[in-house]
Image 1 (cartoon, rainbow, N blue to C red):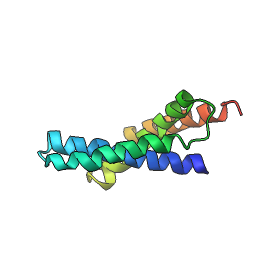
Image 2 (tube, helix red, strand yellow):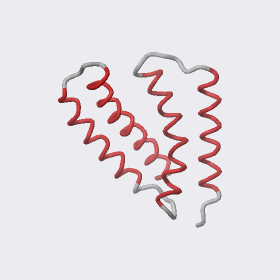
Image 3 (tube, helix red, strand yellow):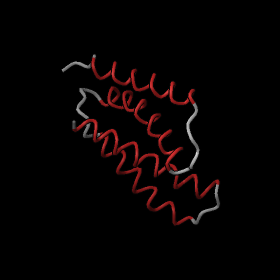
Image 4 (spheres, rainbow, N blue to C red):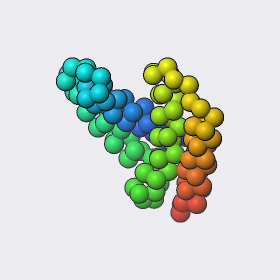
Length: 107
């Protein structure tokens, strides 16, 4: 359960941090957006250390699927654009892949 919460929190923190930079560069937001953005990216990195995996690379690889699904949730919830069926199918495949990686991890 710790890993699920760590992955979910890491995804939210990473997306929020990246969005802060996006808002500054692409949307003309104040450079002050960078301060909470950098803090959020630091939180993201720390949360990934809480994942129960035998190696960092395996934890990061499985996180990729979670990140993709969370990004589509952000697209819908924050940016107001509904994911397409193709988006959802791709995210499902990525989450399946993440599950395979974690299921086969040495204990």
